[in-house]
View 1 (cartoon, rainbow, N blue to C red):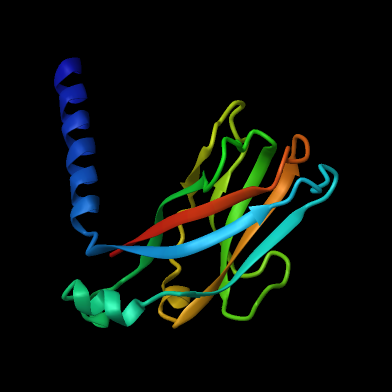
View 2: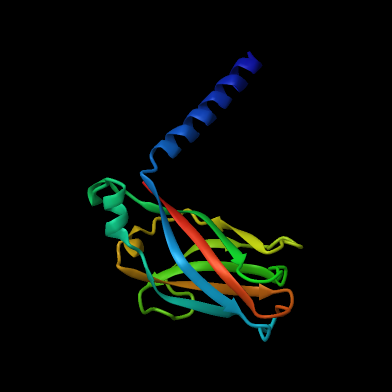
Length: 175
């Protein structure tokens, strides 16, 4: 009897996961997001990096995925990462960070909504830092022609050893 209950629980868990994935209409990437972390960052301060006017291409993505706006219920963060563009630098200097999406033109501290985070960043993380998605609907931002992306380095272990050119790769599930 105990094994039967366990078997039913496992089947229910896997069937719920499949339904959630089936609801994703398409993946919505934001591309060409690059920034640079200078070696002068202080571990005793919070640092903000704003990437302005990132195009969303919302209408184009809807059309290329044979989707109309009425079908889109919500858009949630799906996957994100930082990658070193040049060299062999790593992100071990970061202890706690987040990525926020903001209205175009808004570069105020903690603008918009947190979409990805990582705390704590693992030791010896290397040149690719995987981000954890926040479970929040950001449809109102991505329906705009362009948005601002803000990177918030909340706590550093030490200053970066050199200039670190970074590509921010983020995408969203359209449901």
